[in-house]
Amino acid sequence: MTSRIFPTAQDAESAFYEALERADLEAMMAVWAEDEEVLCVHPAGPRLTGHAEIRRSWAQMFSGPARVRVHVAQQVAISGGMIAVHSVQESFTVEGASRGDAQPAPVWATNVYLRTAAGWRMIVHHASPAPGQPQSAPPEGGAPRKILH
Amino acid sequence: MTSRIFPTAQDAESAFYEALERADLEAMMAVWAEDEEVLCVHPAGPRLTGHAEIRRSWAQMFSGPARVRVHVAQQVAISGGMIAVHSVQESFTVEGASRGDAQPAPVWATNVYLRTAAGWRMIVHHASPAPGQPQSAPPEGGAPRKILH
Image 1 (tube, chains in turn green, cyan):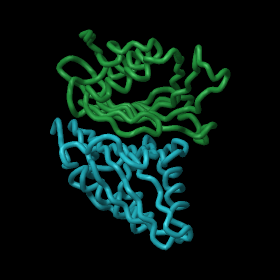
Image 2 (tube, chains in turn orange, brown):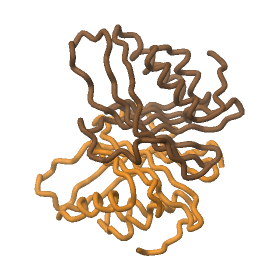
Image 3 (tube, rainbow over the protein chains, first blue to last red):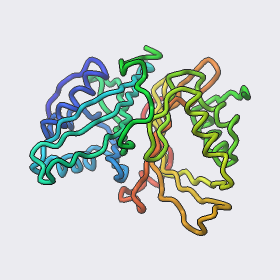
């Protein structure tokens, strides 16, 4: 386990999506809080709880040959001291997939980060399929916004 | 708009599901923070932003003849001062529906609450379809747990 410290929730979020793109399990798990209270819902999947169960799901996901690029957009960031909540739209491009040009639909993700003694860590990742075309206008050009700090 | 004050995030959550069951639009919107930063994703729907857009979606949902009962279970509650995050499984029972006995699949919801000057209010409701049978064991009998307070 690497011991990277993320000074902001945004740093943790960037590391999360970098790890996902690189299919780097150790880097992925270094983003998560070392706590049994962590929760992960992959699109249309069950709710996974705890480090071990979440690690297993990413290991399975990263074990295939397909690599993905993730475009993260329309971020809304809400921060309240100890906890930060980011809502984003994830758009995946599959590289090396065997299904040709088929691309999965975009995904809405709610990512929750906790300020720990070791910097900001992810505690919740809830992802779910979005309609093919977002019907909701991007908030003010998609720039991150905060209502508290 | 009623001016109910919710002393805890749990009070706001209870009021949210009561309003949903009663299809009471004013009670529903009284749970939400009066803020343009509020976000709502209904299962497989777009991300709705702002009070007006979210109000419209509930008004549409409540306008039909069907009334629902919601069983909320497997709550995990995480609180960090200004923000509380609740993850729950919602199971719906449709009353008076025209489709007979068909029941919708369970739903995972991530509900985020903000401590405002007027008590705790909802700022994010992200709901998405869960697999028919949860594959993840309920955490310790489904009792609410907190990691911070």
